[in-house]
Length: 321
Image (tube, rainbow, N blue to C red; front, top):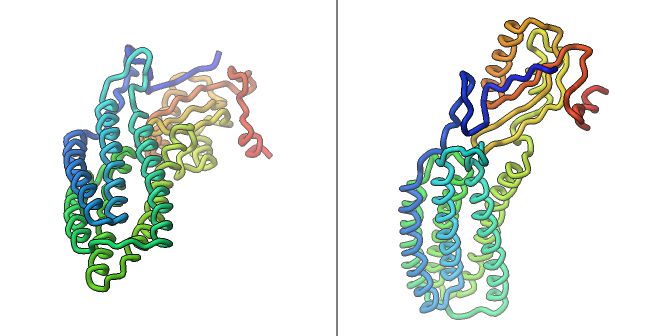
C-alpha cells in the first residue's frame, strides 16, 4: 500500500503532530469599512452634481463609485469570512471567499465601464451643454477622497484587497480625468471633451478590471498559478535523492496568497526514516523556490502499482516523450 505523507492536515478537527494552522487573511476590515463610508458620500454628491451640471463624465464617475460601494462591501464581507475557522464541512475554511468577491467586484467594474463607453459614444455623437465649473469642483472632491481611501488599502496582498484597491485607484484616476475635462470645458466651452474623457477612462477601466477577472477565474478553476512552471516543480522534486519518477502532479491556489501541491512520487528507497527526511527536504524546496507551502506527497515503490485511477495526466504523457 502506498505511503502517503500530508504534513498539512486539511481536516477541521485533525489530531496529532501533523496539524498545521492555516494563516488567516490579513485583517483589513476596518480600512475597508472606512472606504465604504467615503465612497457612499462621494457617490451621493456626484449623482446630485452630475444631474445639476448635465455631465455624463460626472455621472459615470458616480456610477463607478456606486460599483465601488458594492465591491467594497463584498470585499469587507469576504475579508471577515476569510478569517473564520475551518469546519468539518469547509476544511479550507472560507479562503476563496476573497477570490469570489474579487471576481464579482471586477466583473461589476467591467460592466459599468462598458455602459460608460456606450453612453459616452452616444454623447460624443450628440453633444450636450455641460457646466464645467461644477464638474471640476465635485470631481476634485472625489479625487481627494478616493486617493485617501486607496492609501488605506495600499500594500494589501490578497486578490480581494488588491481588487478593492484597484477600484479606488481607478476612481481617483477617473476623477482626475473629469477634473481636467471640467477645466477644459470651463476655459474653452468645448463640451464634447466630457465624452472624450469618459471614453478614455472607460477603456482604461476595462483593461484593468479584465486582469482581475482573469486572475480570480484562474484561482476558482484551480489553474496552475501564472508564475509557476510545472516542469520546474517536477525537476525540483526529481532533484531529491531516492525519487525516480513524479506523476499525478497538481499545483493550485487555495487563495490568492496560498498555494498547494499534490503528487505521487516513485522511490527506490524503503527505509521509512530516510523517506521522511526526503519528503521534508522536498517540501522545504517547494516552499523556498516555488512558494508552495501546502504539499501532499504520496510515495510508491519502484515497480509498484499506482493507487490512483488516472495517475498519468495528459501533460505528463508529454513529459515522458
